Image (cartoon, rainbow, N blue to C red):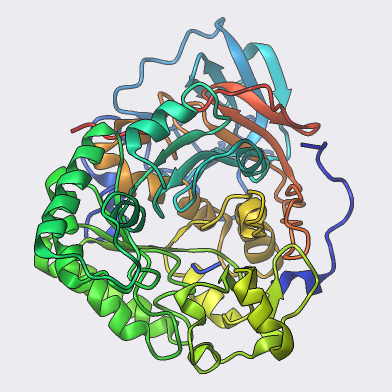
Length: 529
C-alpha cells in the first residue's frame, strides 16, 4: 500500500456515494457493567465530554488541582510496573480514550508484549517512544460486519484503523478451513460466522428460492453445530438473497445459536419502501420463539430505510421486553449490491424509490441507463444505489445501541468505498464536520459495543475494544482534526487520511508512512464452548 495521503479532503460531492447492507443484555447500556472476568476497574471520576484535561498540569489560580482520574484496568490486570520500568513501546502524551469506562485524559500508554501494561499521567520510559501528542489514542476498531480478510482488503482495513475483522455477514468456507487458511498469514485479527446461504447451496445443493425439507433443515442445524465447534462465533442468515429460507429453517439454526450462546446475524428479508416492519418483525419473532440473540445487519439499508425512527423504536421495545436484539450500520447514503441479485427483481424502482440514473457502476463514473441496465445485469455488475435518506443515516448514528459495521472488504471486482473508509468517515464527517455524534459515542460504536456483542463465548474479545491496563495492545492513533475517508464509488482503493498509527498485539503495523505489509500478526478469533 502506498504512503498515507497528505492532500486535502475531496470535494463534498464525492460523499454522495455504496452496499446493502456477544451476547448482550437487554439494556445495552449495561453491557460494560456485566460481571465478567476481565471487566473494567476504575475510579468513577472520569470526563465524559469535551477536551481532556492534561493531568500533568496543575491549577494556576492558587487553588488545588482536581484529583486525577484513575486509569482504567481490567479486573485481572497485573499491577502497573514500578516507575523505573522500561516498556517495549510507549505512546507519549496522547488523548487516551476508553469508551468502555469513558476515561478521557492525556496520558502515556506503556506496552509490553501483546498487552497494555500501563496508562500513566507521568512520563514512561520505553525502548520505542512514539510521540502522539495532539492525537487520540483509542482501542483498535472492530469491524463487526466484514468478509474474508484477503491481503489487499486487510491492509486497507488497517489504514482505516481496523485491528479486528469479523466476517459476521458469513464466510464462504468451513470454519476449520478458514482458520487454517489465514492463521499466520493475516494482517488483522480475524473471525467469522456460519454462512447459511453458502452451506445450504454448496453442501446441500439448494438454490436460492428452494425451501429446505424438514430433513435438510435438521442436517443444516447439525452442520451449524459442527462448524461452531470448529471456531465460528455466530450464525448468519440472509432471507432477502435466499428467499427460500423459511421461518422453520431460521428457527432451527437460531436454536443451535442459542445453545452455543452466540448471536444470529440477519440480512433481513425485505429492503424496500415500507417493508422495514415485516423485515424486523420476522427477525424479532425468531428471538421470541427461540430466545436466541439476534442482530440486524446494516439496518441503514435493510430494515430501516425511509422509516428509521419506527425501526429503532421497535428494536428498543423488543429489548425492553427482554429480547436480546442489536443492529449495525454503515455511515453512507447509498447501498450497493450486484445487479443479478434478487434485490433487482421486477419492481425495484418502486421498492427503492429510485431510477436507473440513481445507480452507479462500482469502480467507474458510469451511471446506469435504461439502455444499459439489462447488459449490466447479465454481467452481474456491482452498482451503488443512492437510495438512503441522509436523515436516516444521522438518526441511526444517534441511537446509542447501533454499532458500526462496514459490510465490505476490498477485493478485485468488489469495490466498495465502505471497505476502505467506513470508520474514518464516521469520525471525520459525522463527528467533526456535522457534529451528529460525539467522539466518545462514535468510538463506542466501533470498539466496546461489538466486543460486548460477541464476548460471552469469545474470550479473545474480552480483552479487545478497550483501552485499559491488561487489555490487548490493539490500538488506533488518529488525528481528530484531519481523519477522513477518501474513497469513492469510482475510486474505492484510497487509504483514509488521519490514521497515524495502528498497533495489533503490541506490534506497530501502521505509521504515517503507511501500512507495513510484512507484518502478518493477526490472530484467529474463535469461540470457546
